[in-house]
Image 1 (tube, rainbow, N blue to C red):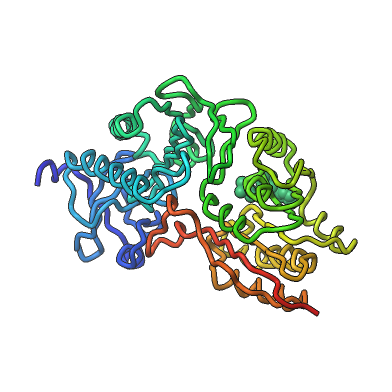
Image 2 (image 1 turned 135 degrees about the vertical axis):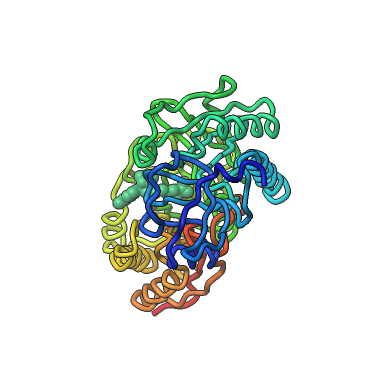
Length: 403
Ligand code: SAH
């Protein structure tokens, strides 16, 4: 095996080994033996306490996630870049085959594409890359990624989007977000025929929750009448509802997000059945409380709050938050009304989320028909055995009876 001897070995505990065997790609620092001399971002060979080989991984010297498995094969150093190139090619081919009706999607999704530590989003003709680990910050890995993206998306610009917090966790030198290729950092992109602004470097950063693309279309399939989109951000659901509803209100606590939402509204001047969208800057919890107390009613409500459960311990509190929102929304829905309700906390499982919804419906005296149980769009695939990749839940339901 070429150059194999120079590749460091990392021993993982029984707990770490069983995680890997169950299909997960991560081993935490507490589950590996001491590793003094391994270079940050190195390719390593992983074995269990009895010396059995578990595969090859990328190493981080500082993150709590010390090991991200690449393959269960034993990989030589000179096989690393060709493997990554093959995985990029596969990720892009998967999108070409399966993503339709948009010029924008997540082209590479880290673990779910077996490229742990790398995310690339495509916004029309601008690509935005996020490096999440020491390994993908290595010059040779960056070069492989940039070359592959140039070949797959000729003429597109490429942005390096920096999350300073992640660079700190990975003990990487600070870096600014910047253009790596081309000259465009802003563009207009299209999801399901709805147009949006993207600006990767401007003062007012824009972008999108591309994982919701198919859920926008699903919500619009059933939406009707008067609609309320809570946690609208830059208008993702609201702009889709505006094509089928008679009135649309978008609510968010962020003024800058609503300003972009309004600009997005103006990008789609002829597409609306609802007249002007009403954008309200408010705390959605307070607004739902006030509106339900005032007995306001809607035919369609969307709930897409930020992740409430950042850790396992926060799940109960998160479920209480989801219940409060869903209960109030259900009370405001008319007979036949549609609720599209989401959670992006991977700690809250689909089962728990559906139980919360059933309890909310019971407390609101509403009988609900579940129309669709959905996850993230196909360009954000989930990895079997890697629950973090299956984080998004979106349930579309209809009120079919109430007291
Ligand atoms: N539905 C959006 C994404 C929502 S992201 C889309 O599809 O694009 C979550 C949003 O919730 C953010 O825009 C954030 O500003 C907003 N937010 C967070 N807490 C809030 C609160 N208490 N009330 C209203 N909006 C809130």
